[in-house]
Length: 144
Image 1: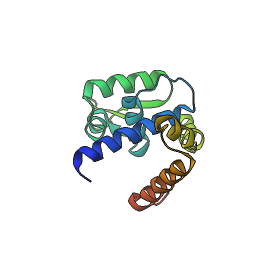
Image 2 (image 1 turned 90 degrees about the vertical axis):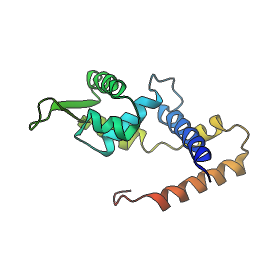
Image 3 (image 1 turned 60 degrees about the vertical axis):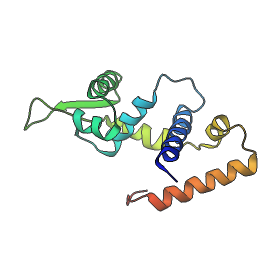
Image 4 (image 1 turned 45 degrees about the vertical axis):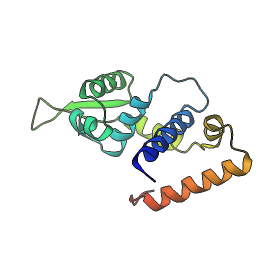
C-alpha cells in the first residue's frame, strides 16, 4: 500500500460513511461537516484550531461548520474560561445520543452497494468482513 492508494481508499470509505450516515436520505451534510462532527464527538471541548488541524480543514471552514451546527442544536460552543479568545466545542447531549445510538449503529451494506455497484453479494460480504477486521485491528479505544 502506498500513500496515494491509501488516500484513495480513505476517500472511498468516507463516501461510504457519508452515504450510510444519511440512511438513504438526501441530507445536506457534507464530507467536511462529517469530519468536524466526528472530530468533536471524539474530542469534546476542542478549540476551532484543534478541530481544524485534526480534520485537515481550513480554520474558517471549521468555524462556519461549527456555527451552523451550533445553530442547528447539534453542538454547544462556549468561550474557554482560561482564554476567552478561544471557543470550545462539544456535542449537544441530545445530538450525542442521536449520533452514537441512532446514526452510529446503522449498517453500511446499502452504502457499500451504492458506492461500489460492481460488487456482487459475495464481494460485499467480503468487503464488510475486511472492514470489520481492519476496524478491530486499528481500534485503540476501550469503549468500542
